[in-house]
Length: 328
Ligand SMILES: NC(=O)c1ccc[n+]([C@@H]2O[C@H](COP(=O)([O-])OP(=O)(O)OC[C@H]3O[C@@H](n4cnc5c(N)ncnc54)[C@H](OP(=O)(O)O)[C@@H]3O)[C@@H](O)[C@H]2O)c1
Image (cartoon, rainbow, N blue to C red; front, side):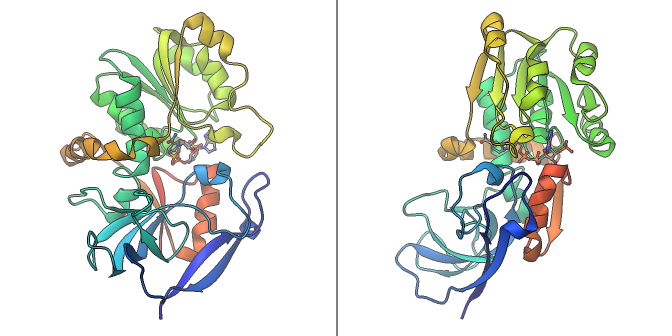
């Protein structure tokens, strides 16, 4: 008998997610496995900003990924004990298959000595977002200036370090002194606490030659201000807009098109799962940089599956440094 737990969405979010929007329920996963299915126990679960804006139906399990091990298998590619990444939502256990969607069940990236949770962070979805979004799409060149906000988060902290590896000047914005100190220790050239420093004042100082690549995790007013500092033909990666996720009526970025026109900017929309079949290209280089210490990462670990909602909520008040995960 496999008694599993899952978090379902009880009520559609209005504004910031509330504990009462979620309900913890049990389910029995003792049934026989169909061809291609495996039963997985989650060790670490991911909480991510996209879960706030992704359309969900009330009563359905909260979406999301986890890393864990195979307990039972009816799939030749996966043995009992294999470490896997699954996309089955907020569940302690899940029956999954790779037959229809390879994102639902995958072997872990090579992690070397890294903890299992790194498969959800620097060597998982956020790390791949940073790698492909910055290196593959924006193609930063030596000597260019790269701006990243949400810079102490799972994606942003990797973006800034990859931009340093590529020989760029890096400007990062984050929301606390501790986060800014960490970014300075990672050799970001200019770091600002956006809660204490006006974006324009900061960029007047840090970007006298303008910005060539803007990796935008935050959107909203920050981006309106940042656009004025873009160099002609600069590149912008629209990765996310966390400052706008709670207000359905607000635009991700108010009226950017005149600036895009005048500066002849290139703006890329990017979704990391679109390049899922290419993640393997990034793994060797990312793992090497991690092993060489050129790339560092932090995780904010919340203990206990019952605390998933709190871990999720804290993304929107800056409670995490680096990747936010929950230890089941
Ligand atoms: N396009 C894709 O494929 C893709 C993939 C992954 C993530 N994303 C997006 O990338 C962004 C970062 O994701 P992540 O996983 O790396 O999250 P994260 O940065 O690890 O966590 C969220 C952080 O955002 C900051 N934040 C929260 N509210 C804010 C606000 N109103 N203004 C400015 N900063 C705010 C907080 O840090 P502070 O203390 O600094 O405020 C918080 O710690 C999100 O917008 C996410 O939706 C997109």
